[in-house]
Length: 191
Ligand code: G4P
Image (tube, rainbow, N blue to C red):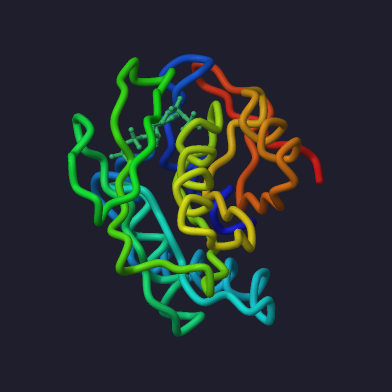
């Protein structure tokens, strides 16, 4: 997505060769006009596939996911991060470990909001190692929902996330794919 790539080049900052800072327009201060365009693009790509719900992982996935859900006119499910397992039979939970942040959490979803009738599109801001997305898929499958695909705002294509998801048969659509980055440069994958 040209608009997004231009914004990453003008306002993103590669902190080092692994971490891209986008807190001026995606995950601290949010640009709603850009998010509107992102939602329209995900909806254009995934429309007509019988999607019943959009799901995301709190918190930075919420902005792009809400605009996508709005465009598709379906509810948004926010998968919550709990610090530990909760003994409650009304919840689905699965453990996720973030390599980037060095933390683990229990991804949590109330059983009342998802069923075997749901066909779910997962949206997230970053794809790095694919652990969060894999956890979200595991959680939704506990409810016997089916997965329409994964929409990612920024994919770090030099990390293994995309490969892991493709191996699981998941369709991944990323709006910006970073091939390489470092101090003062960001290069996108040539499509
Ligand atoms: P994975 O899910 O693909 O395996 O990635 P990993 O666990 O390694 O990292 C996940 C967390 O790190 C996510 O935030 C993700 O947004 C963030 N992250 C990964 N790479 C980058 C990066 O280059 N720049 C920025 N700004 N963030 C990155 P989270 O823990 O889910 O927190 P939240 O921000 O959504 O609340």
